[in-house]
Structure formats: C-alpha cells, structure tokens
Amino acid sequence: MDVPAREHADVVIVGAGIAGASLAYFLAERGLGEVVLLEREPQLAVHSTGRSAATLAQLDPIPTLLALKVASAPFFQSPPAGFSEHALLRRTGVLNLLSASAWETRAAFQDRLRASGLACELLSVAEAGPIVPVLEERQFAGALLVPGDGRLDVHEILASYLRHARARGADVRLGTEVTGFAIEDGRCRGVRTQDGEIRARLVVDAAGAWAGRVAALAGASPIRLTPLRRTIFTFPVPAGVDAAGWPLVASDPHTLYFAPEAGDLMMSPMDEVPIEPCDPHPDDETIAAGVERLAALAPALRPQTIKRRWSGLRTFAPDRVHVVGEDPVLPGFFWLAGQGGCGIETSPTIGAIAADLVIDGRTDRFDARLLAPDRFA
Image 1: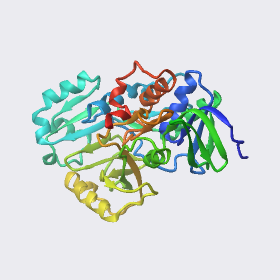
Image 2 (image 1 turned 180 degrees about the vertical axis):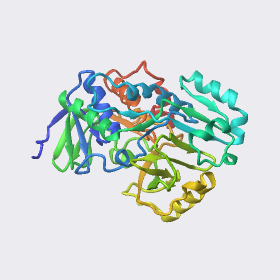
Image 3 (image 1 turned 60 degrees about the vertical axis):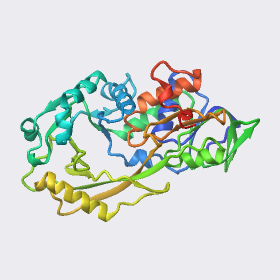
Image 4 (image 1 turned 135 degrees about the vertical axis):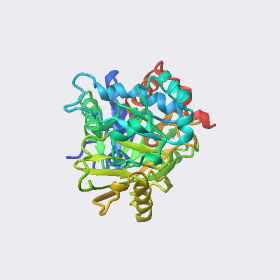
C-alpha cells in the first residue's frame, strides 16, 4: 500500500541505508518522531549497506576514525536493552598482520592504540602463526590481535534501527526519489519527489554514493565525494583445512583480508577503484590479482573455484573522514555522508552525534569540528 505523502515534517532524511537509519533511531530516542526517510530503491540495503564485509574492525590509521570505531564498539558488543532480537556481533577477533616497518615501531604503535581505548594484543610471528596455521610466516613480521572485533549482523542492525524509529513515528518510504529541493531565502526548506513536496525544518543528505549528486541538486557546498569500488568473493575451504575458529585476517602488506563465511572463506582484494555512483560489478582481473597475493600469504588457501562475487561502493571525502553537519552555505541542508568503509561500524556514534547536531546544534560526544562540512571551505 502506498504511504500518503506528508506535506510537513520536522526532518527529511534522503537515504535509508545505515546512515539515515541510525540517525532516525537516535532522533527517535531523543523524542523527535516527525521524521521522513526517503529511499529511492524499492527495497532496503540494495547498495553499500547490504554489500559490506559485515565486520567490526576497530584498528584504523586515521585517528578520527579510530576514535569513532572505538566509541561505537560497545553498542555492538552490548546493545541497549530491547534494541535487537538477535546478537549484533559475533566476536571472532581480527588479526592484523604487520609489515617489518610497523613491527619495528610496535611499542609506540601499541601505546597510541591503548591510549585510544582499543583493547589489543601484539603478537610475534610465533604467537600469531598457530591462530591461523596456513599463514606463511616469512610473509609478515608480527601481528596485532583485537579480540573484541568480529562479524556484524548488518541486517539485524539496520532492521533494529528502523523498527525503533518507526515505533516512535518515523515514516520510511521506499521507491521515493528526490527530484528537487525547496529553496527559499537562501535556505533549504524541503524536498520534491514524484509524489509531491515535503516541507521540513531540515533536510539530511544520507544518500551514500549519491550524496554528492544530491548536494549538487540542492546547491549546497561542492564537497568532493568519491565512490570507490570494493570487491568481495567467497570460495570453498580447501580440503584438510579447518577454518571454523579463525578470526578475520587483515594484511595491509598484501592488500587483502579473509575470514570464515558460512562454511566457506570470504576474501577481499581491498580494491579502491574510483567509479561513478552505480550498481558496481566485480572485475575478474582484480580478483585474480588478489588470489595471487593470497597464495603468497597462505599458499594452502589458493582458491580453485569462486562461489560468489560482488562489489559495493565506499564513498570518501578528500580526508577520508565522515562529513556530518549543516552546510555552511545552504542552511537547512545537513550532511551525513562520506562514511567510506566504516559507516556501519561507526553508526552508533555518528548517528548520535548527528542527532545532537540536528536537535541542539551542538554535541558533547565528540569534537564535531573534525566532521563538519565547513572544514572543506
């Protein structure tokens, strides 16, 4: 049944992926229920949210992202009472393989991570090897294990955000595309769709890979957002290998990660290919090159067949940090974009920060200046 369009709302959110859904949840938690989420696709999780690696991996070389991930992890590890019907996180751990240069600076490296609140363990090659016995020990110099990390139930997270938001009055409309904006006296005052105009105090751009196009349509600041393709594929566990208890293994020196996945193994060659917003498809050459790197790191895992393959888009601002806040040149237009490859992992903190900014214009949770769109002015 078609949901009749409202003429007015307090907040309109463009995009019902993880960014828009988490904001709607935290707005509802703070008592703001007059929220409309507009999703262009006829169903949820068609693009980045539904194509992620579904992993909580807190380690990050960018301090702002590390802080956001560490602040978000407790939400997944111990969700609020009644938030979800099933566990959000399966704690498998994430084993990060280190190059020789990283291992040489491990003491300072570990001190910085512990100061950030990240619970982690530095492991020598001899200590890391037995955790994943197929690793070729000459291929890495040490490892950093984050035992509290693991695999996320993305469907449960998204559904729970939206279920609670709807219960408090949020209206989620699928198959509804924004075709224009109501701009009056230099302020964004609503959106236009194929079903009519929705007036709002604030319009939030949570359109993922399309966020830059949405902003351009509104006449907001020209912040450069770049979608990058990321590929994932699965293959059978080789005969004689028991991978059931492995953590996710991430190796920056080999530009790949792999993990057990529903009885198979999942791997990504960690490709970052600039691409226009679209429904991306995997590239065979990218997969083949990734397989060769995997064969160097873990020869016993070289796939003989590929079972599934898919690609998603990870969209980055120039500094690879989220863009969250009201536009500096178009009041009433609010950015919730540029979440790169950690939109799901950071959604509890980013959603709460965005809700504070939408309602109060400020937040005590985080230094919002690090996320503000005016940093690109």
